Length: 270
Ligand SMILES: [Zn+2]
Ligand SMILES: [Zn+2]
Image (cartoon, rainbow, N blue to C red; front, side):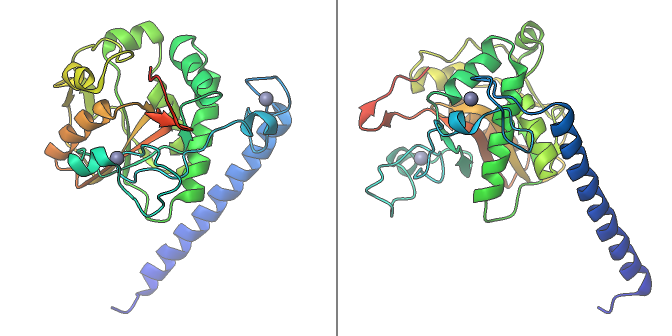
């Protein structure tokens, strides 16, 4: 269909607004770097630009989850690059369609996550969110989802902590990737005990029926945001609720994957 003068004008205006927004964002990042230079939250050395509070040395300690199951992000043996799904997903596929976890749950990510969850270190959330956003930008080849939904906390836990760690991460993703973030669509109806120390069967039982939709889903492609995937049972339960509400594609974005086996050794998952 031929473009009318009005639609051409509107397209031109939108492109101009987008360019202006990018320029303003770049200018704000420069001003922020000058006024509050980034500082490493782990060792206190100078951080990296733009606005990453992690020095190059500490960033060098990050353990990358390079070769992983494309559905649940479980790290796979480096000798088998043709395998794209792990045995567990081939036996019983999770409800979510794919997962992206760029790092292994080990120092320094594990230290940053524990600080965010248990010691009120909100600055750790900004670092982890920036790292996750940068990895998605770098490694994502296909279209981004329509919506970000952080794994909700139950009200008592939220009041005790004062924030939801998954929302802290999702805010960085919203800012960097220009995605819609919704925290009002789904709620945790009961406060489940911490999953730490439970095996995968107990985790599934623990989380069953813990979420419910409290509004209609406005778009069909969703990314659930969490700090760590351990067995995937929380993401699985949430994905099931989202699919029942009409989601067509649900993926999970988490900073880290707790590996069953890492560097040939069985790893304790907490
Ligand atoms: Zn450092
Ligand atoms: Zn898998």
